[in-house]
Length: 441
Ligand SMILES: C[S@@+](CC[C@H](N)C(=O)[O-])C[C@H]1O[C@@H](n2cnc3c(N)ncnc32)[C@H](O)[C@@H]1O
Image 1 (cartoon, rainbow, N blue to C red):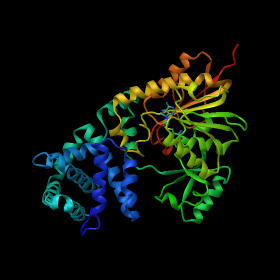
Image 2: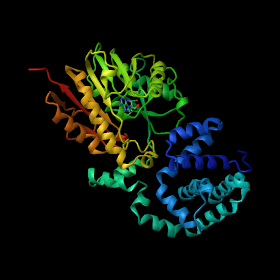
Image 3: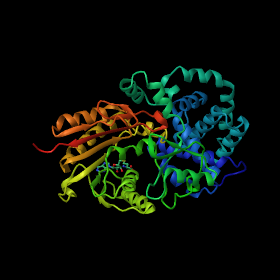
Image 4: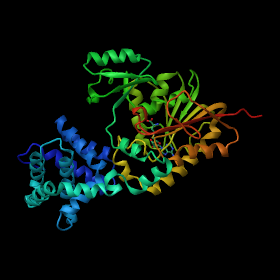
């Protein structure tokens, strides 16, 4: 599409399209952005589209409400992209990083090529109207928890029920912009060497005492600018996800199964820690390609296996594993700060289906563990039914499973397992629990 005059028009238009793809069509924001931004050369424009689309996701109920209030009549479905353009602009006006006149100008220009520009006047009028009614509208937003907090009702209620008194903190952490966590590849660098390399590149980072392989960056940097990334010395991985290997008590020579491996972050960490014989399993052949790429960049090797963790008879070679990691598909309610669209893409009914899958996976994989071996169960969820509730019921079903406590590791002691809530130690929300298989009597 040809864009006219205003340089800011194109990023606003793309942000509106991205929001529409997520909120009207149920597509994942990362995937939409990957394809929309493919042809955008200017890095600042790409960053702006991301920031605006993420901002709309975090504030969707308020923005949807405000734009509906400001429109005199509902917008025709064919003009829906203009509705999203208005939500992007209202978000920017509320966010106040740019002068109001620049935001209005860019939004009007962005509407310029749509249907011969006949909605430019409407965009201008709605945004001017917002400037006049801003205070009253903000008060209306603040009166409704869904609009004010920016989450769907079912999730607010679920978190209230699971974490009484912690709701505000969990939801606020989910709306914060996370720091960039790095994992240092122990086979190449110590964290100190990595710190020095980053400093030499003008990037300030800090080590994290409870996370032996991690560094945290507070400033925004382009990931591709990180020294050592292309050579496999560094990877991007949240601190919480890095805790899993410490639960696994890895040693050279063990036979290990990563049962839900893609895109390969934890498989890679396992192989950086020890010389193990690793099978990286995933049900998705497409996602296994990402594991292959991850391991190749790091110079690591695993047996890649496409298969359903709930149906081992389709892929298992009858040789038991010493360690099994079940990094299960889950609601991803712990990583909403990184993927703010998740709250609109997940439904309450998805959670019930995920709980059934997690349960089936644990049941199917436990017999594959050698006596004396360890199974580690992890999710990036904050919902008790997927976490401590799921693992407790697993322990009750398996008399030969003995819980391993890791009180020295970060996280709130769960019952059983350990839970990090979003923002705890600056991490994503995460759950992890481990059990040893007892030797037969
Ligand atoms: C939370 S992600 C795993 C992240 C990965 N462990 C990492 O650290 O990069 C969950 C993965 O489980 C996979 N998955 C979902 N259902 C599965 C099943 N029945 N069997 C095996 N893998 C499955 C998904 O394709 C997805 O890649």
